[in-house]
Amino acid sequence: MNGVTTPDYPRLAELIKTWGKTLGFQGVGIAGIDLSQAEQRLSVWLAQGLHGEMDYMQRHGAKRSRPEQLVPGTLRVISARMDYLPHGLAGAAAVLSDSGKAYVSRYALGRDYHKLLRQRLQKLAKTIEDHAGPFGYRVFCDSAPVLEKPLAQHAGLGWIGKHTNLIAPRAGSWFFLGEIYTDLPLPTDTPSLSHCGTCRACLEVCPTQAIIAPYLLDARRCISYLTIELAGAIPPALRPAIGNRIYGCDDCQLVCPWNRFAQLTRETDFLPRHALEASNLVDLFAWDEAEFLRRSEGSPIRRIGHERWLRNLAVALGNAAATPATIAALLSRRDHPSAMVREHVDWALQRHDRPAGATPQKLFPLSA
Image 1: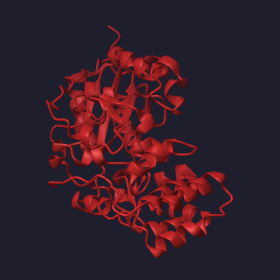
Image 2: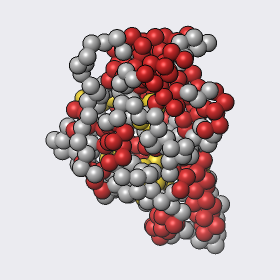
Image 3: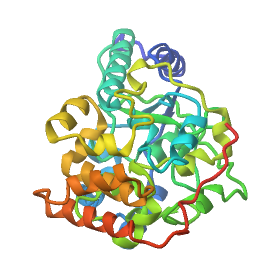
Image 4: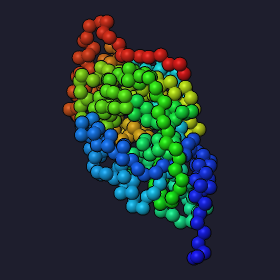
């Protein structure tokens, strides 16, 4: 015997979950690293070209689906979730019902979540180290090729719904995920089973029919992709369905019956800033680049830049009521230096020549 004491890994796993909740995570679980089924689904999805211009989804090869290749020595993944919903869902429905308002995905209303989650995960790793001694680990939160949703499902935090978001049985889907890759041989949790049943609410509500089959998303049609990931022009055929959604889309979450269990966030960083939860399109369209950069400081919105910000707003203004303020706002950007902005502004102005009685954007009832 060398006198080295083997850690009580089952006890350590329970402590990790307790420490995680103390640090503000609403759920913590432990997953193994066999993602072979998820890897196969990802390969088929990429081969079909459903990822659009998100080349980073295939850039790292098998590292995304094989944690031990991304971080050699990895045996387990500690997966954690943190709620971000800033307020009740009635407010979101009210904004979507008002074509003059700008809808921003609820996750982006406050400060950027990446830094906060990484800091909390780092604190959790340090707490583990203080208790169990030095160990190998690496913290992630959308910062590397990680299949976070399959890992979270394997860790028992929830199942991947038909809209491809993770759903927790007693918390819905309004949460962020983060991971700690570790070489600790911790006991793993029981993977979550799907409880979507026969429900098709998310498929039916999607404004652009991006959920082309249960559990299958065509990112090229998804409003979140179109308004955030896509660098160039938004396809004209999809613009009317975007409505007033200028950054992301929450429709599939808003109608999910499991979100009746969603809890409001406890993190002040995720609360709305600059009144973005219900701003007027005309007011946001008036921001010059300096104001955009100032108001988007510390926000995930900054990543799209001012040009795409104006592009998205021009589409929303084209879908808004043809008020004098709307027309004046569009005309003010008609000579913008960006050809992309000019093209979307011209499209929006042409939209306001459409005949009266055009079909409005699809809305939906909310029980929350």
